[in-house]
Image (cartoon, rainbow, N blue to C red; front, side):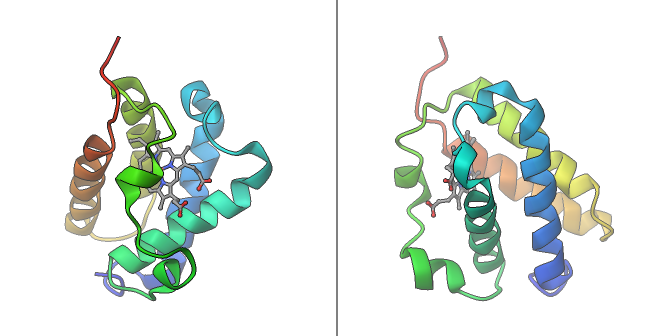
Amino acid sequence: MYERVGGHETFVKIADTFYQKIESEPLLLAMYPKRDMEGAKERLRLFLEQYWGGPTTYSDTRGHPRLRMRHAGFEIATPQKDAWLRCIHSAIIDLEIDEELKEELWAYFQFAAHSMINKADD
Ligand code: HEM
């Protein structure tokens, strides 16, 4: 999948667009580290590259992903999940790849984002 979607360049684009989009999502801006947005962007990119079959730099440098655990310090309910998905959706629709590949990425992100919820809605 890593190669089919266009390799490293595609994941750079996804991470870049995602981090541009969170600038207009107050719920997300409140959570992300303002002084380390470049670092955060790189962590997301490296994780996704590894997940989709690319280099394993993420685990080589950060260890086992344990994403639910790494998100435990952030309160993620439906509004945060929806905001996150809006950002990643924009990043995917902008890609110049086959529709079915976009569908595959989108299906994964919906599932993954849902599984990151750790707080009941108010
Ligand atoms: C559901 C809504 C989500 C919210 C609100 C959220 C929020 C955050 C925040 C605030 C960070 C800290 C940024 C940093 O310093 O790295 C983070 C890290 C991260 N998130 Fe999410 N996230 C969500 C879903 C996801 C999903 C679905 C994935 C993967 C498909 C993901 C992957 C990551 C990764 C890889 C990191 C860096 C972990 C590390 O190595 O420390 N996130 N997330």
